[in-house]
Length: 258
Image (cartoon, rainbow, N blue to C red; front, side):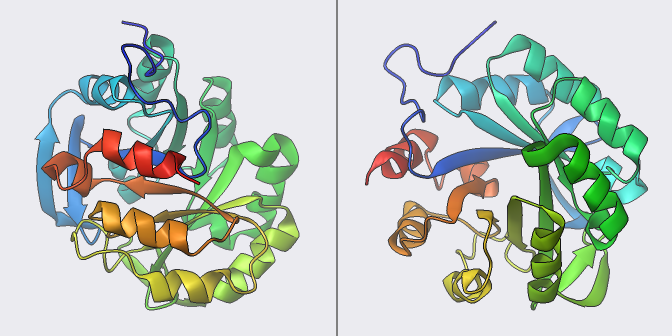
């Protein structure tokens, strides 16, 4: 079942200027999408996440964004074995988040061979972020999930008064090299990417960015590319892939264009 995602004429992202990252959100063992992160607004797309991973990999994906929703809501990862299984079966890079809130859990994830660990709620803890970065370097990604420029935590259920721009500057000073920027108000809505929000965020931020939230068409990917900002390294696509409004092969073609 081993797959590189580049055989049979499939498009590889080895030379891509923008990384296209399919999302696999896990809840109770199934592949789901939530509307604006709300657990009561759930759509189930597949019962077997490993088969979903195989699908995206066979179409050319080189990295998967795996979100443990049960872990995000409970504070303890529940689906690490799924990520492990995918990693063992396929030649694929995985970024995994949801419930990573202690040094022990972070270390366990890294020891399992997961390529990148995503810190969300604990982004507010400078000590934890510093520990993570000092120990694991670029393998640590911080996710800033935003509602109207303010940080949302604990599976997006808790809104804060924390300004994401100030927080991002502090994270970069701590040594964070990559941030996932998610507009929660658009996630799972197919409303389109918020270009103004991205432009405002990247003005004074000096780190790599991965964009998420609302990406619903090839035009959205083109808009992000047209920003011409080298800080933007990738985009995470979820619902649009599952509903078919974006074809992964087409997205990869756009990503490869200069």
